[in-house]
Length: 166
Image 1: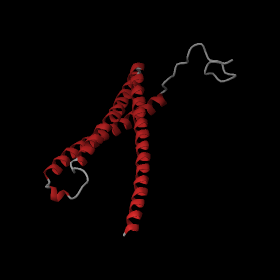
Image 2: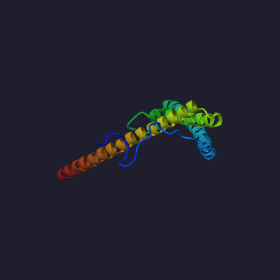
Image 3: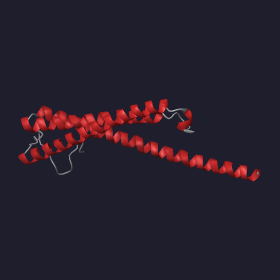
Image 4: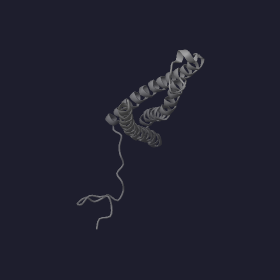
C-alpha cells in the first residue's frame, strides 16, 4: 500500500531536488517585486487618505447641528468611523505585499535563500489574509441578503395585516 504522496509509477528521490532561480525567473520575480512595491505604496497612500478622510468626516459630522444631519437611524459620525475601520483592515495585507516586494528584489539581487523564504512567507500571509477576508465578506453578504429577505417578508405581512384592518 502506498502511504506517501507519490503517484503510482513515480518514485520519490531520496533527496529533494533544489529549485534553481534562472536569469529569466529572476527577472520575472524582480518584475513581480516592482509591481508589488508599486501596488503596496499605492495601497498605503489610499489607506492614509481613507484614515484622514475618516477623521475629517467624524469631526465634521460631530459639529454639524442635529437639524442639518437629517433623520438618520444612527449617529452620522459613524461614517467616518467606518472609513477608519476599513483603513485599519487594509493595513496588514498591504504591509505583507510591501514586505514581499522588498525581500524578493533583495533575494534575487543577492541570491539569498533566507530572504527568498521571507519574501514568499509574506506573500503567503498576504494571500491568506485576502482569502480569509473574502470568505468573511462573502458570508456577511449572504447573511445580509437573508436578513433583508426576512425583513421584506415581515414588512409585507405587516402591511398586509394593516391593510386588512383599514
